[in-house]
Length: 272
Image (tube, helix red, strand yellow):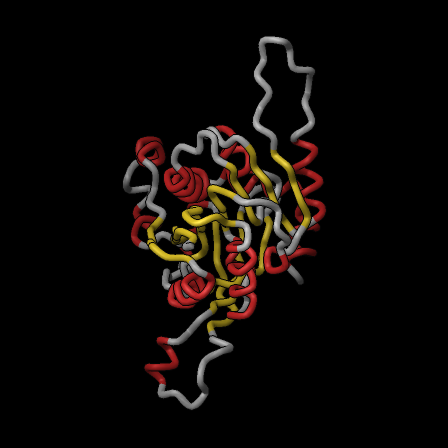
C-alpha cells in the first residue's frame, strides 16, 4: 500500500496516535524543544497530516505556516479544523494563518522561502537514496541561507521489534533490513555498515488501532544526502521522556522506553 493510500484510509483517526504515551511524552516534547521560539517566523511543515504540528508551530509564535501532505484526506481534515467555530469578536486576535497543500515532498514546488522546515516522519517515506535526495533537494529549494531543518524519524539502530514498547501504545514489526545501494560483492562487515534502509510496519494501539508501512533510512545515508543537498551543521539527537511524563508515571514505567528510544532527531542549516 502506498503512503498516499494508507493515510487516505486512516484519515482523522491518525490524531489518536498523538495521545499515546510514547508520542505525548516522548515524540512531541522532543520536537517542541527543537523548534524553540518561533515568534515571527515562517514555517513549512512537510508530511503535516491533519495539522498537529502546524498548529503547535502557530501556538509557539509562527507568523505563517504552510502544511504539506500527499494525502488528500489528511489535508481535507486539516483544512476543516481551520474553519472557525464562531466569528472572532473585536477583542479577539486572529490566529496566524495555516495554508494546506497536497504535494509529494519529493516533487515539491517552490512554495516560498522559510525560516524553519519541519519534517516529522517525512524521511520514513523514503524507500531509497533517490527518493531521499529528491526530498532534500525540494526542501533546499524552499530555504534561504540559514533556514533550520528540524526532523524526527524512526531509529533503525534501536531494537524496534522488542515487545516492551507495546507498553507505551506502539509496536514495530521489521519486515526487511537491506540497502538497495549496497555492493553485493562487499564483505559482510562492509555490507552491514552500508545498510541504508529498514522497512517496518508501525502499529499504534489506539482505538481503533492503526498501522503504517514505513522505511527508516539509516543516519549515515541521511547525513550524506543532507550534505549533498546543501545542508550543514548537522546534529543528531534522541527522544527521551519529558519531565512531565516522568512525573506522571514514574521512572520505572519508562525504563523500557528510556533504554533505547525508538526515534531520533536531526537538525541542520541550509547553506549559501
